[in-house]
Length: 222
Image (tube, rainbow, N blue to C red; front, side, top):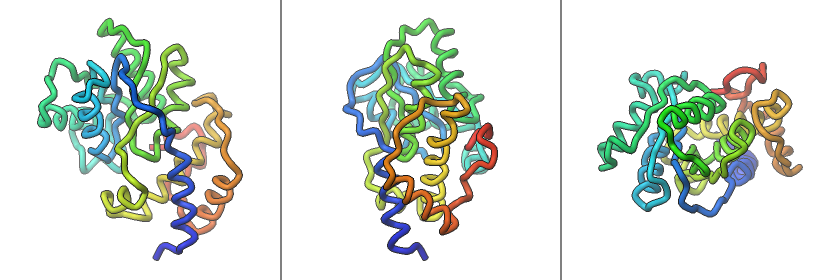
């Protein structure tokens, strides 16, 4: 049973993790691999709305996707995009990345190999990974403009879609921890975290929502 206070705290983290960027057309849309096929669906939707002429899906597998996506996250995202009517020639696949830093570095290298002219990136992630993805991209690819995006769902709607409340809250807590410790490791830019968000994070940790915390900040965190 999730307490009322934990729901309130999780909502605070959820709101903070989203960047609330205004969508605009970019050079490329990069969909970050995960357990959530909604990332692929949202990437396709944005492509069809004219927000990017080219798509990159990036991601290998992780402990949460090994069984659900045995061919790899990026590969299955591409398959999903083709099912939804996206032409295959506009979808590039980066199948090796196992963490957010590799998602960015390997996608950048792939686009350079393809001789793509990239001045701006529409970065699509899970809703609670927007800020982490943005902070990582700003660190590793500072010369391009980054617009963060995700499936437009309220917190409770997202929980319902995943059907595992504890997993979602664990992920929220893990993502916040990385925002706190990864800048010190050089993995992302530093960002201000409101004290109310820190307090909510601390309470959730004390309540045991810790399965996605990393003891070693150099861990990939997937």
